[in-house]
Length: 251
Image 1 (tube, rainbow, N blue to C red):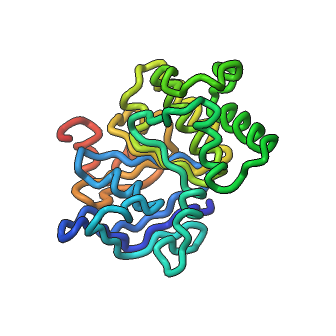
Image 2 (spheres, one colour):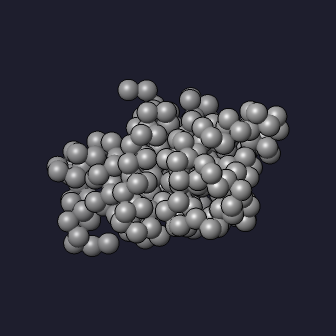
Image 3 (cartoon, rainbow, N blue to C red):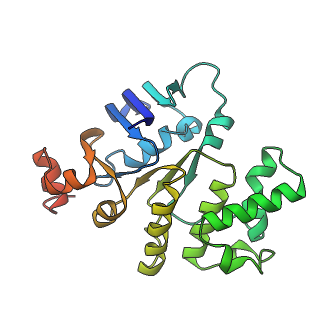
C-alpha cells in the first residue's frame, strides 16, 4: 500500500518544551488514519505539523522530516500556500465565514485565482455534493453559512476545504461539538471521501476511531506508543499502555 505521508524522526518543540518525540510512521493513501490519546499528548500538534500550521507560533520548531509524496514539506523552497492547498484542514468547532453558503465554498478557489463564474459554480456544486450538503442548501446558497445547524456548518467547512481540491484532509475532532445524528452523517461522509482523499483524524472518542478508521495511532506524552491497523490495535494491542488506555484504565 502506497504511503501518502511519511514522518521520519519527527520531533516538535514549543520553545524548550518538546511536544512530539521522534515520531516515525507512514500514512497510507486513500485510508482514514485516526490518532487517539489523552489531552495534551500531542495529537493536534501532530496534525498541524502535517500542513505547517504551527509555523505561525513564535518559538515553534520542527526536527526531522515530513514527506508528502516523498517530498519533505519542511525542505527549502517549499511553497506553504501550495502545501495547504494539497493538505486541507477541518477544525473542532465549525467555523463558517460570515458570508453566504456559496461564498464560503468559493473563497479558497477565489484566493487561488479561479474567478471564472462558470468554473466557480461547478466547484461550489461539486464541493457541496462531496460534503453531502448540496441537496439541503442548493436553493438557499445566498443565505449566510451561520444560519445552518451545527452539523450542516461542519459539512460546509468540509466543502470549503474540498473546494481547493486537496489530496489530504486533516480533521481535528470534527464531531466533538455535534449531536449524535450529525456525528453519524460526518462519519458516513468520511467513509465516502476516503475513495478520493487520505483522511487524518484526531479524536477523543475511541468508539469513533474504531468505527471509521482503517489505521490508528496511540500517542502518549508525545510518543507514538503504537500504530497499526485499527482492528488489530483495538482487539490485540501490543503495548500495555495502549491496552490500559482503550479499556479506560487511564486517560
